[in-house]
Structures are given as structure tokens and as C-alpha cells.
Length: 145
Image (cartoon, rainbow, N blue to C red; front, side, top):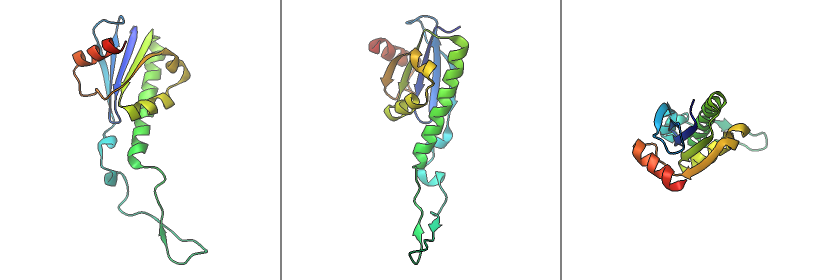
């Protein structure tokens, strides 16, 4: 049983940590990755935009993408991280959850978190720390708490 959960994430990687007490050592329990978020925009879309033939106009026009492919992939990963956090939360009933995420991704996580999980969030830090050491993450949590 984990008393506290910590999620450190960006659009391509999420590291999940647990600790027994509020300031005890962090233990990395899982890493989730989303390689599609690291791809370039042109690698996420087809080579050529589709065409639209309109009855009133002659010729053709490009069909613009409604959503940026990078944003769509980040949103998919935020849903995946949120679902995993919901699963861990329902199994372990933590006393608190800390979210440490790149600013835009933090917003996506907030959007997709279940209400029960949102109630357990005790700390949010807007910072990209996915490549930091466990010690650096622990220091950041202590200074922001």
C-alpha cells in the first residue's frame, strides 16, 4: 500500500513514484512512454492534405487538419496517464497525489482526471522534470510542499 503517489510527466513520458510517508524516499514504481509524442508533425500526418470539392466553387481546396497532430498525441497520452492513475488510486487509496508536469501537459492531465482522483491531488507543480534524478524530484517536492 502506497500512502502517497507522485506523477512526473510530459507529453511523451510519465514516471510514477510512491512513498510510504509524506517525506519518505521516493520509489519509482512505473514508467509510461508515448513515443508518438516525440515524432515530428510531418511524421504524424499523411504526405498530402485531402481535398474538398464544393458544389458552389470550381476547383479544389485543401482540407485543413482540425487538430494539431502533436496536440492530439499529447491528449491521448494524458488520457492514458490519467487512466493509470485512476487504477492505482482505486487500488491503493493514497492519502495524497502530487502532479509534476510540463505546463501544457499538466493542463491536459487536469482535464482527464476522474473526480475521485482530482480530490486526492494535494500538490501540483508546473515543471518538466521527467529527465531529473529521483533526488532532484524529491527536493522539488519538499520545497513546493
